Image 1 (cartoon, rainbow, N blue to C red):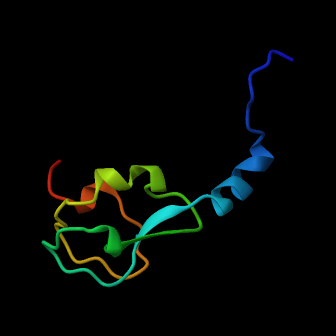
Image 2 (cartoon, rainbow, N blue to C red):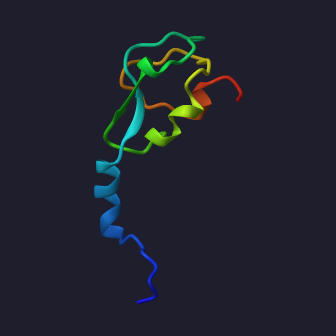
Length: 79
């Protein structure tokens, strides 16, 4: 081998299922300023990852977000 680790196509679905996304811990109103208490990390992945939490804490939502909705950067005022 060349020493470079690569994912096999058969590994993609399990990795997504086991990874985590940042989600709303409760319903949040538009213009709410996000705190750590508003955020939970849950499976499956596909959204913002837990290591990106500092990108959204303190940011203002541009629309209402329902509980368990995965966060994305377009939900916030321009950063």
